[in-house]
Amino acid sequence: MPSFQLLSIPDYFTIVKEPMDLNAIVAGIDSGAYSHFSQVYHHVLLVFTNAMRYNPPENLIHQLALKVRASFAPRAMISLQQLQDLPVKIQTEPAKWPPPGSRFPLAPMSDANPLRF
Image (cartoon, rainbow, N blue to C red; front, top):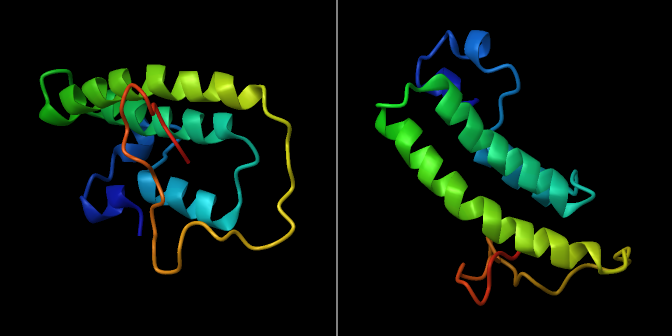
């Protein structure tokens, strides 16, 4: 069930025209629905943009979304620029990483390691 239904915010679709949530992004990554990092980047930014659109500026959710988006966007853009230089490689055998049982193989975010998927 989408988070807006769990939170009882029935006017969500009248305000947010392109809903997106982090669970949908993770599901898209897990299913291989994304063909390029830029699609993930766009959807992550959309999560925070929607939070800011739905919640007024004085709301804590709006303020946190603004901070997270401001931190995520430049770091992700660096990774996106680096990925554009890499050749596209089709995976023909199952990945050995992440190890079985690991759901999020993301490395910690830092200036040396801006973002990894």
